[in-house]
Picture 1 (cartoon, one colour):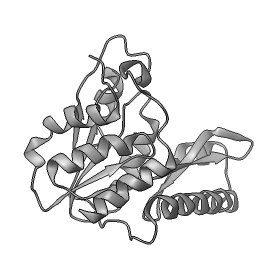
Picture 2 (cartoon, helix red, strand yellow):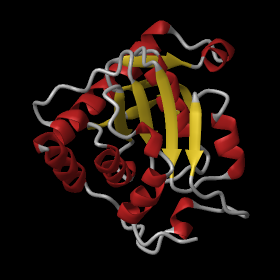
Picture 3 (cartoon, rainbow, N blue to C red):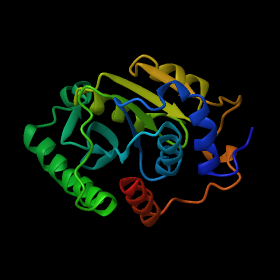
Length: 213
């Protein structure tokens, strides 16, 4: 099964989420940038509001690939206590890295959303959408961060994903909807005919279009 592009993938995914159509408690959040075109189709089909949910990794200085935590939209922060304790990372280092990433997250949110405030997820059923799940690192951080904001239910929804990653996320999300789980998986982009990079402008336009509906 191959998707023509992210829009078609979102249309297919939305058919698996029909039970959430026309519900006042449902919000659709796309992970920028590639998840937003998929999420836009889902939100349109379900008649639900659309927003972005940004996650920024807190990398250990000098070893940025090692995550000591993450911050996300809404000022939510999740720390990896195992890494912090094992490497004896000081509070000052954590705060310095977090502040730098917070500024970048806020810059991107302004870029994407403009002056519009983020949607309030407290007490809502939130459908978190990306264009696919390979390692699932960003999605795991998003779920952990989102849960701190008090939603009633977190649903992870993707058009394509690794069997193992989709299964693993079921331990943290309330529901995981993976439309297609090919074996072998290899990479998300292999299952799209057009997997060209989504631009910041496209993300902004999709959010503006939804705000006008």
